[in-house]
Structures are given as C-alpha cells and as structure tokens.
Length: 203
Image (cartoon, rainbow, N blue to C red):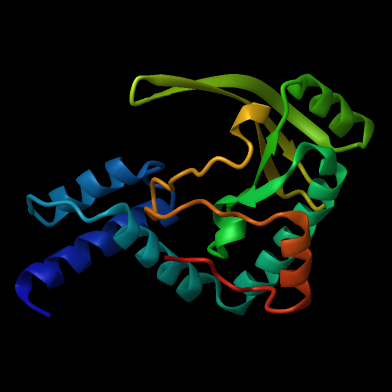
C-alpha cells in the first residue's frame, strides 16, 4: 500500500468511526471532518466508508450482531406480510445485512393511498410514532413519498416509505454503495431466513 492508499484508508476509517459512534449523521460531513483531521485534500467514496463501517460494526458487536440481524429480518417479514397488498420490499441495512446497533428496518411499499396504510398499522397494533410527506428533487424531477415511522413489538425502529404505484418495479440507484437497490420481497426473505439468514448483499 502506497502513501496515498494508506491515507485514503485512514480517512475512510475515521469517517466510518464518526458515523458509528454518532459524532456525524451524514456521510459527506463525516468525510469532510475526517479529511480535515488528517490534513488531506481528497475524500473517499461512500462505498469505501460503508465497507469500513461494516468492519467496525463487526469488531464492536461481534456475534451478537448476527443474532440481531436475524431478529430484524424476522420482524421485517411480519410487517411485510401485514402490508402484503402494497408490494412490500425490504431495503436498507437490514436487506444489505449491514445492520448495526441503532439501525432501523426500512421497507418500501407502493400505493396511492398511504393514509390507508397508516390505518392498517394502527388497527394491527403497530406503534406508529409519526408520519409525513417528503419531497426530493433529483435532476430536475420532484419525487414525493410518504414516510411512516413506527416501532415493532420487539422495540425495533421501523421506517415505511410509501411511493406511488407508478414507481413500483422501477430501478433505483443506491447513493452509498453505487449499485441497484434490489431489496427482498416476501418470498425471497422467507427463503433467506430458512437458509443463509445473515447473508450480506454488497457490490
């Protein structure tokens, strides 16, 4: 490893450490702070930081991390079955297999009536904490999604993102890993839990 590679590795590790311990919440801010600490003028990629973050999580949490991942995937499956008619897709760190302490379960659903989802969750005694519309602008196009923040029976944080039916099946690029967000549907998650329940999905 040459000096540049070594410096890049140290910056990535520092940025990942800042994220792991909650000193920073966003990748960009963690990069900038890490680069400043080491007095360098380059920034590592999100992928480099994410891979370091996964290593740190493994070092700090050990075997308990894998057990917790299985529990999170099991809880995700329960919620997805409840939302079966909305084409649920497990995404985020629980899909990736990189979940750590403080991670939540991320599920994407597709409906033009997200308020009905909210009612279903409440009737099913899922503890809903709050919900709101969010709008993001990407390359001149505005996308709207309805976010529901809740908690599972085992006190695991849950975020359900309801998108328009028109967006179902459309490919989405991951801003951290740079690959396609494929996620897991109900049958795929069931198969995973019966086989390699802690499998990771990394580029």
